[in-house]
Amino acid sequence: MIERRTLLRAAGATAMAPLLARPALAQSATGQGAALKIGMITTLSGPGGYLGQDIRDAFALAMEMEDGRLGGTPVRLLVEDDALKPGQGKQIAERFLKNEKIRLMTGVVFSNVLGAVAPDVLDSDGIYVSPNASPSTFAGRECHRNFWSVAWQNDSLHESAGQAAMNLGFKRMFILAPNYQAGKDAITGFKRFYKGQIAGEVYTRLDQTDYAAEMAQIRAAQPDAVYQFHPGGLGIAFLKQYVQAGLSATTPMVLASPSMDSTTLAAVGEAALGINVTAQWNSDFDNPASRRFVEAFTAKYNRTPTYYAQQGYDTALAIGAALKGTGGSVEDLAAFRKAMQPASFESPRGRFAFGANQHPVQDWFLLKVERGADGKPALVTKGKVLENHTDAYAGQCRM
Image (tube, rainbow, N blue to C red; front, side, top):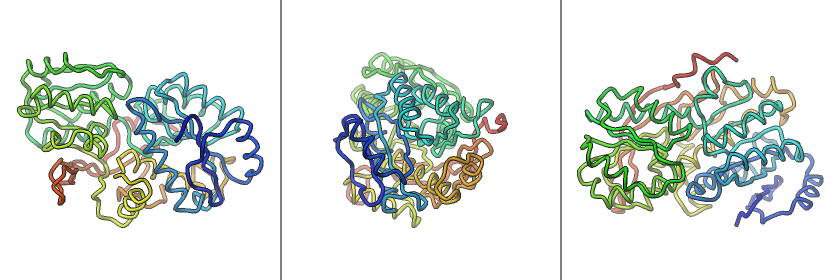
């Protein structure tokens, strides 16, 4: 069990390590001086805890599949829980920078935490590679040459949902998201591509678990469908209450991937049947890289990987490709950037590239919750929604 810090060692010791006190960690670092340290600050506790756990586990899996290396370079992964608290994330980043002398970091799930973590890393001439949080602030005018997103730009996944709602013919949509940067990006992205009528627009609290008031508002508005963005445990609570309120029987949903992943689906069960979801990857993708990833993740962790897991895996592969190009060094930042930008790795998503703002250019797909071959609800890929899609802010970025 991970309590405070996890250390993943190179050179063959790839299993999750137990809690290590700081003196023991420092001694270990001396003994493993040849390994490159990577700092992972992520959310491992609270309603969104499984998101960070999936990112961590998939990143660790990529290391294990290369015998404790990335791109041929021995690496050591130090993991700490930000507990979805920006101040705590900032403190961890400062310790990683000052005490551990780490220059390469990753892991943040939530955009409000990233806003506290990334500036310190970048101002210290460090490198940040995001496996999830990718707010508009880092994609446009405030883009940074040492910041990459391997996941998406926050607006993009919601743009795909807006396009899906148009394709499905919904004329009036009620839309909801938490009141923080990613939630604002979600609403903005959805409305950028959805051209129908907005029957209601609500911002919820990031720590909210009771949505009775929102259910009443949806019922009163009588929309054709609902779009809501509530990641992790927030989404599970919202969906369960949506069903309990009887709304699922009358008002369909169109969601982006953070609101319906394999973990959410397992928690909600048959109530999710018929929900439409957009994503850049699904566990049923039939390409060699995806099959290899899904089989390895399922065998090791005995659960289906979520999108977050896939993004954590790709983040490790992207870093590995850059390290291969630099011979394992992050000291020459220009060389690292040159090696990182081509995205020279085989992604389970299929086609993947970094745009001019170092955010993904990728395809988006429509999934639907249907009964699988075993009779249980499953996310099934139905077709493509957006092709070779870049984000709305790339043109504003000047490196």
